[in-house]
Length: 384
Image (cartoon, rainbow, N blue to C red):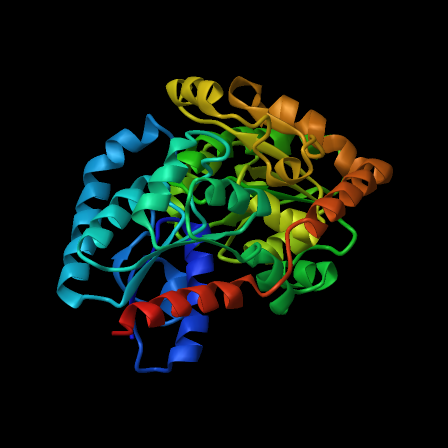
């Protein structure tokens, strides 16, 4: 069997790598897996014809400059699909890129599975109907997302969130082991910095994050700061550290985000998958995000949900502080982080809320159920 898999950013690459490994386990070494992704998918045996390193962007305005390159990549993927004629395609998240690709693939008779569809329940609900028309199966990771897409007419399978099983299956270090691995003192408070997996995110968020760490260093004795660098990014994004007075006190660790998370007392993170990982691991956090002013203006008018951090979305209330745009300053971030670093009751209260959110994220084995759904569809499509 030949399968096209496509992911456009670090989280999609992680899920795509897990799914590719499961497909290869079931299909055997004779299966051909090819497409777009990063190191996790490549390690799982996907032949990358497009590498996503340093390429993912987010936001209406930010994406404009990347449109020509993204269109070239989409055309190339589509041309390769026409030549190689895969038995099916699995498109993972990254909706601005994949929705158009799904339509093109369906037109030439290639079955399409959309794994982690767009957040149409949060904004642009018409997207759900479009996804229903241009895909053969939609694999949802949240129950409310599955209900939304079912109402839109999509062929939906609710698989649960992949991180539930991925984190439980991995041999993660204990907090003590993680600190030893990173060379951190066992009793020292540790602030984990997670500025994102996109270049534009890091460029906007890293300076105020380092400012916050500098503010806290004078208030929290022995504080250590560790920055988790996404494997899809080059070290050139770390330029803000070079010119910052506190920059040389920030330890940079590439590709070991969960080790950094386990070693951290508190996280300062951008909204997204990181907040869900932290929820499952029970690590208190403060969430921040900055985007182009016009993008933020549009988002405020289009988004239909009051929160961005995933534990807040899951519980329907703010259990994790969220700051955006001009609110994201070193001083304000430090103000919110300080009680989580120095007040054990405040930290424990947030951990209890995170545990409640984690319990609502569905059963384990999401990747196995996703593989079941993919192979069931592709086997059915091959039958005469």
